[in-house]
Image (cartoon, rainbow, N blue to C red; front, top):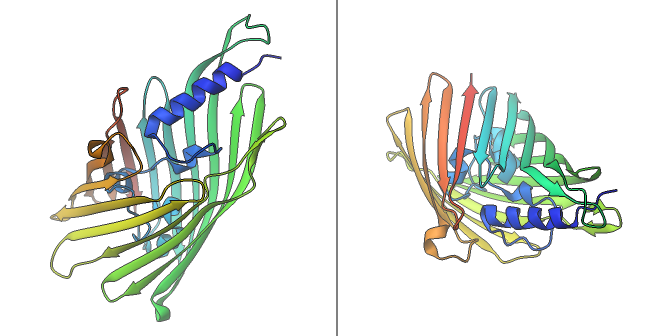
Length: 297
């Protein structure tokens, strides 16, 4: 059977280059990649945001504020032939919201060798995640609770590993503030053969303020990985008319300097259809572009 040692090294290096994460030696790192043009452009300061289908990744309680059936697809080509993406749908019913999401990270074509370093052969590796989401609003208390059950599968050639995880979150409205807290990726670790690895468990808290007469939404989040350094996210969205939004943000998870923290993008919405774009500054390998298309009734 072919060994995958060298290929695994290439995978680790590639994944590290994508977003220079501070998640340590953990499996399931693609779960921490920012999905969606709007949250990415806002620096991932999304723990206190509500009413967006991408709340399912940062704080599932935020799904409780969705008002209609919403569907979305996101794609982010990165370096070489790697890419990651997200497909999701959510349906509110009375005070409940039900959702389903699929995420993936495609490492592209990789090279493997046998135990003697001979007989090279290429293969593909793709991490897959499936999430079932639920949120419920409690209008009398101006709060919402939410959670998700996630299944992660990481295959490499003929080997694969699976893990089951839980996310949980809550939001609370206080006047024009919305506060949120969430715990993500809590569950069993992944195991390849006899080697096991934990998951990127993260505790997050954040807030958002909604102005009365100003179409500006500022947001802040603090992410505390159980095995890494705290990360601060700041973001803002300014809406022009009812169809165009400009967004910017920063996230302090990188060590390449202030410029690597910055994010930016925009969104266009018309008649229920929407397109969102975000750009993440890269290292010497280039930039990451996130494109999202969506629809809501």
